[in-house]
Length: 394
Length: 68
Image 1 (cartoon, each protein chain N blue to C red):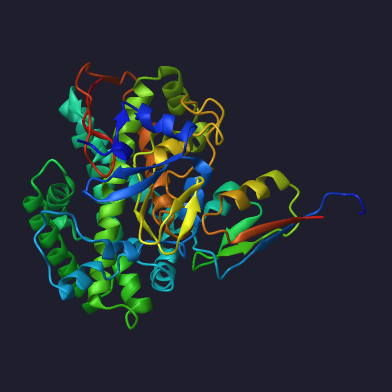
Image 2: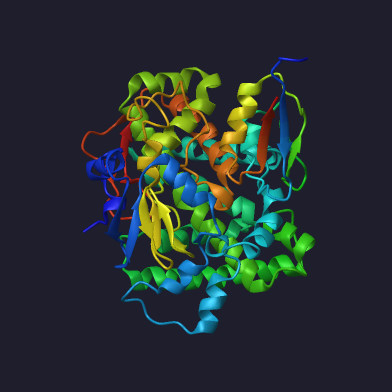
């Protein structure tokens, strides 16, 4: 049974969650990991929780226990696994790590990556065109593009990229057995450790090289591995599912698609509206209340878990009129698809750039792009919502 | 100036997490330095609406606007 905060009805949040938002706004649920948590559904309440790392802790969540059924790990291994993971840290630890990474994600720094992203997008469109229709847009375009962009950012050598991509997919594909995914995660960490050692011996122009040059004395190898692993996890499936699901959303709204394809000045707003409307991250990271407090009129006890339902927050009538309509002409940044507060997605400028390049390039290359009816497969049980496959023709 | 609406923009660089939302929302008012931290380009912007939106959307709450 998919937990309520991860349920969807096609592009929409589960009707039960929308009812909750219109009513009490908050309720006790059982999470995917078998623990109880409060789910918060309104835009204002979600922003309140996400804005306050003192009352709502990410680091303390790590104490809440691990998912049942997973093999135990020693405290030392656990500490190693959490090193460098910004999503598992509170200030001042979080502030220390984030400050080191921020220069690599400025709007200006992203512009330097732009030509390379265009090349990666074009290479995959070329391959799709050569191969001819039909094609699985997820496997041929949506997944590999962000994966190669991460390779570029981390400095994964060309010779390793195919293997890196295959391993990332195994690690992140929730349809694989948990043991397989954990094995892939261990292999991935081993690879990252090799990459980090290489960067320490000979720092290049990529992000790991920069971190070693600028902060080599402040970061342990475990932290560097943790940072690289988080960037892979956070930057891979998120953008991939936005590209896949976003394309399907546009194909099913042809008037909106035509604007994204033919009116380049609209693409910024269109990307924001797609982010808001699709809200592919169900809930981001859970939080643990550090004190007895109150949200949406509900008493929350210290030690309680709190999940923020990003899709219902982004479809809150308090945020936008006619929130359930997809209207690419009105997009603005005031949504919580990237979260809010100090954990607001570090890679947001990169994700935006990949979509601003990816959607128009795809739609202009294949002006007759159409879904093969009945092939779009929504992912029903995953941390990140999206499509497992989407057959397209042109 | 009495009676005029004058907006004053302030950024707390210690609170800033470098999300860059302000640059995206009101690029004439805000920029990021080489470390990604916010810089106020125009303390009294003409486009108060854009500045207000940037303040409202700042993920870390580093921005504020005083209206006199």
